[in-house]
Image (cartoon, rainbow, N blue to C red):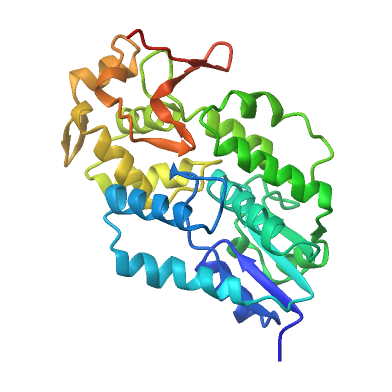
Length: 316
């Protein structure tokens, strides 16, 4: 017999937490990190998954077996669940979650047209200055979030799909202009997530983006004895990205020329010069195969003074 509710969650920890609280229904865990690497608009297509596997293999050494067992099998389970009366999305406030959420809604728009879709999104909680993940909510708080879940209208679904299309396009410039202008949107945290996304393009000052500059600043202002300590501090301090330790390891590895040692953590002279904007590291980092969605990371620069993106045009 089919369940009346299908829960699509942002990760295994949320799925396990909801199951432990005896939430009824079927569960699908969306195991992806679409905020990094190449994406195409056609979520779930052969091209889409090929791009995802190519990225995960080259950047994170993910094997084909792991990709199939961990991500594709769960996606196929989603494809097979067609009978639920309501689909409930469980996502969080950060960039990692918000981009995954857009992709899932885009898929639902195509393959579950007319279904009742609702959203539970964690972040602000009364009495807390810190934004909370779903698994940080008490049983009472999570039940309240579920009770107050937002029914997504067709307009909401169209809007999420539109932002996803822009994220997958080869230029972030339209995304830069539209993301702020939907005050009635039920996606409370989407604007701040997109803002954080735009700051991932290299700064005009030194060629590093906001995250890379934060890595250098954190390394320079503490005495860390190991890479693990540095990553632990970065995870503790991040507010909008929702990255895990694997993503920070990947980013630090790309910056290894700016360190003389990782045990203890020590910036090189070049690293300090970059941090102080005396040296621009853009040309050494530039990689034509680094994508955010459909956009090449190094085809745009972020102007910190105007908070605007600039397209780089190369003379042939």
